[in-house]
Structure formats: C-alpha cells, structure tokens
Length: 145
Image (tube, rainbow, N blue to C red; front, side, top):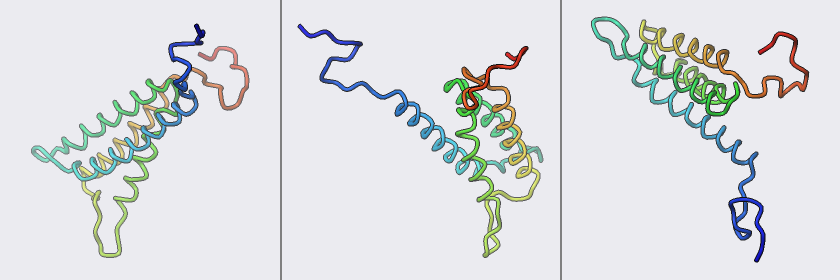
C-alpha cells in the first residue's frame, strides 16, 4: 500500500499555491473591470435630486474592495479590483472625438467618481496584511502592529 502525503491520491497533482493565489488575484482584477463597466452605466439614478445610485455604488465598492483585501489577507487583495475599476472609470469618463462619454460631469457623476475613489483608498488603507513587510523584507519597526 502506497503512502500519500496529504489529502490527494498520488495520481492527482496537487495545485500549486502560487498558481492558485495568482488566479485569485486575476479573478479580483476581472471583478474590478466588471464593476467599473456595470456601475458606470448605472450611477445616474436619482431620487428627488439626490444621487442615490452613486452613493449606493460607492458603498458597494467599499464593501467589495474591503472583502477582497480581507479574503486575500493583503492590501494587494484590495488593490486588485480597485485599480481596474479606476482605469475603467477614467476611460469611460473621457470625452470621445464624437463628444460622447459615459460617466458625465453631473452631481451623480462626481459623487460616483470621488466616492468610489475614496472607497478604494479607505479599503486599501484599512486592510491589514498578514505579512505587511513582505515586499521589503525589512523587520517591523518598533510599535508597529
């Protein structure tokens, strides 16, 4: 009888942790693109002149970016959906040669743009990394959490 080293039988290859982590970051980036495209076409709903959809979408962005950072246990997890969302937002808010644009310069547009950017910033700053000094390899400074 063969001994196995883990829950997988010898014939089944074990997934590489780096591949799975990279795949998760890729999924988060695609999620950021999807959020940016869908939200850019839905931000302008108003109730009595109040840009309710823009406010709600900013809160949704905050929740998604925070959840991504929490799930990946790193700030990079919060950055991965936020950066593609911001790139899509910039592209869709730029005026085309025909004069068309998706994200307009209205009150709802500004609430959506700045609210989402602030939500991304808050999510990135407030996410606690499992290894905060991973990139530099430097020891933690005294008094750091």
